[in-house]
Length: 82
Image (cartoon, rainbow, N blue to C red; front, side):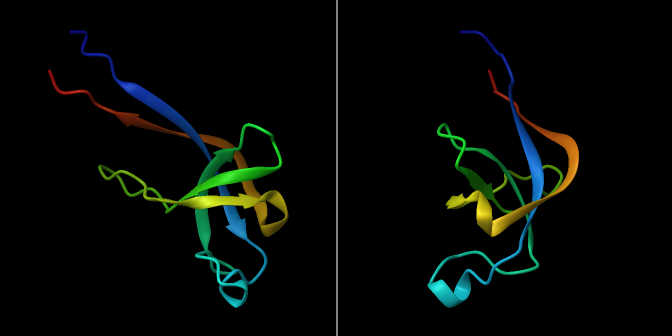
């Protein structure tokens, strides 16, 4: 079996609407990582990435809830143990 590593490219986003008021798991002013949904209308949102830890999936939300923080791509590498 091959021992390839997997990489996922995340963008850094900040929540601009109060998701908690609508019963959502996102907080206004909180920074998150994510990538666009397949339909390009929203983001798959994850907790902020801590070095050596996997980000935790929070959910998929419309783009209107977020603002792009920077144009940098943040790559997370998942190492496959053989």
